[in-house]
Image 1: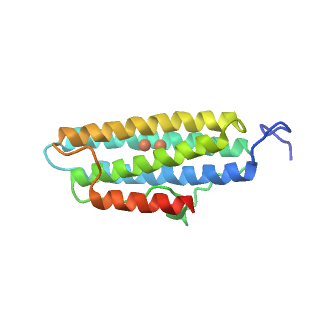
Image 2: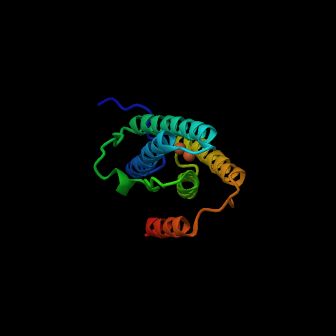
Length: 180
Ligand SMILES: [Fe+2]
Ligand SMILES: [Fe+2]
């Protein structure tokens, strides 16, 4: 097969980078699905503006998924879109939440997990794969914006900007898992 973007000068471990990117891809797809669910389920007096924000985030996560999938193919890998094992590959969880506030809190937890995971990926890539690092840096910046948006929404709804204790515990557990 003809080689494309991967030249002899490529310094990273290609297979590891593809694996890491497939985990990020699963994370993005789970986020698309969770935001879509929240978009359609948002109800109550504040529902309209919040539902619009959920949809905007869903669309941006979809863009991230596409950027990541494209980079995987440039690295001669195969983007894993299989529903099987999607949640195991994903860093963040799919939690529905039963109220508007709970939905926003769950989304904030998921964004914060993505932020930590992507920061680790950027650090891991360093100067070994600059293109992938740049893509992940752009996505990381967007996730930080998302987290800020959600924090603001919670504040507007009269809640503190920190995720609920239960969700935070789950997030910490998930992070501890990741390190192993
Ligand atoms: Fe994203
Ligand atoms: Fe996000």
